[in-house]
Image (cartoon, rainbow, N blue to C red):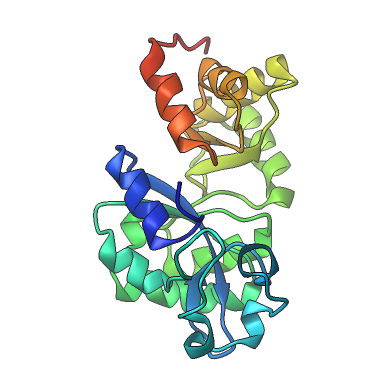
Length: 230
């Protein structure tokens, strides 16, 4: 499998049938939004440099350990017009340039924004408007759940709730999924990476799974029909 967050990885995922891709974005020193998870190049390129300290010209030709290079977000959106993207802005500096790219490339309707940071999500909502799909930041999730319980028919400013893997507490997870879905929101789970976790995620009725093991997920989905226990 290709290196994460590269053009090669997106082509590989698309080739086996996926149409939803989760990516992370950082901002270079000269304000270019690049698709990369870490704040530094250490893990994937063996260099201590911070993305925010380098210009795009300095970054664009760096070879990653698993192959490939770091792409610009606008390049990704243009090269994969049929894919939909879940985007996590890893820094607050990236928010405004990210909003501009989504509008300039007319990609708002095929993007969802998710982040630990509630302030980044709210900033994206303000900059892009209500058409943008968003998931609440970590601090806002309890309030979304309370609202789902007390006022399930009241429109939400969010389209989905993206949560970490809570499958060890299966009954609680199932209850959470049902409550949120009853309020009209989707539930996306990250990051189940084993066959058992993927089976469990499907069985509790989540709407989306964010996983590093896309080939394993494909095998799980194709192996046999799985009945949801919603």
